Length: 627
Image (cartoon, rainbow, N blue to C red; front, side, top):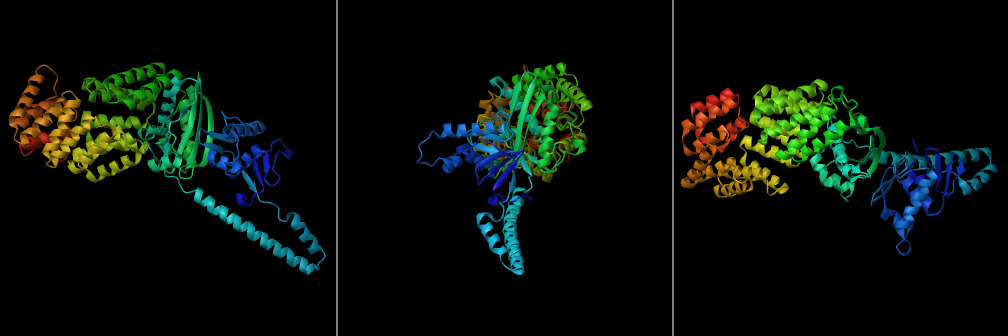
């Protein structure tokens, strides 16, 4: 056990030692030429090893306010001189790490040696004891040993207490956006993609809560202090680092810090061929997992293989298009093209098939691809992805969505969502999809538990949609109002949240507010049919039937020249009170397996007047929903 720094005289690291009392730096016993402010700076860094020493702290300790110097120039020169003597590098630091605009951190292990007992005064005491009788010398020696032992024990106890405080278990972590240090600014997508993939890898670690990508990306380029970021994200630790991508080589520097104290826990630099990038991501995740005392279970180990660099590059571009703009048909088509390019360059790259399947599913939701075509293509891509690597949690989640939204196979959906979460416990999308599925199955308590988990992992656009969808299916209108309001804080012009806010108001009897929100949704979507039908229903409820009939007549006319879902037409006739025509279209929607039909059967206010009809109960039974 090393002595505490408070009683240290000599600090050792690698083959170096700094004698604080003499002000000397030695390497293997040989004195090195380092003196003045550089050696003072080194002493401060060594005594705070593992922790950030801010520029302000260095200024206050070494350059008092009344000293007229160019502080930036002097500090830069001091750090440069230290690195020169130690043989260190700013680009690939072994000892001193620069935290831009913040300060410096000594990152190598430091051994602390206590001062020798005695010194000049001690020698005089020894001489006095030598002339005394043997018994008195013995007694004096014993007292000296006891006294010195007490001092060292007190120091050791304080150090151990400090050490114990520093080893509080880490249960939650956030990966801040990796810095792009490549000479080419166009490589920004590569650093963002690496951030996304590292989060995905860490999401597989059992017992560790990993904040989602959408939550951390807002800190890209931030100047906020790590403790402040940690408080906002409610995490115990932070991973930060950088990426340099040049040609076929990539260098990733990552470090783990205890967030509340900014204490450095671990750092490593990896230099690899781009083709080994998947193994690299796994290595980094494993190293961090070991530091936080968690292990990847055997079933959670991804079957990483060497990937074609061009395939990986295309995959990252496709993934970023998909993640950032998954509601926009044009962006989804670009993502599809990149995933297909990735597969063409490396047919054994499982993640590319999983990404392609996601794209097909969301293209169906966005109306950019016919439902049946999207289903077949997604099922084929998922089959290939899982044949290559059955441990991809994202692929099992997408298979759960296919089973639920397209097949109406509730048992298969339940198994796949559970499998996805078992493989990637912090994969937020799996929790989002499972929350709405559980609400659909009437498993309210479990659904709300998933909502709690989502709130811990993320609150971005995807999470906001899922939370609103869950409360919508539960017909929990006060909670739906609050969830929709939170969603609108992310984007005040999001039509879907204005729509669900309108549903929440209508469900609580606030018809005027509901009509206002429905009208906003109609305006923002240039006449979206769902929002328009909801507006008509609210008009009927408050007695403005003539306005409602005009809206519904226009929708009926539109259905003759454009594709309008049979379920939507069922709502039109339900609102008008024509139950027979409504059930006629509901049967058509059932035969076509219309997307979202099960969810709407569960919760849609527009068809509430059909629920007491025996035909409705029979339809719900055929769909397989709980009564």
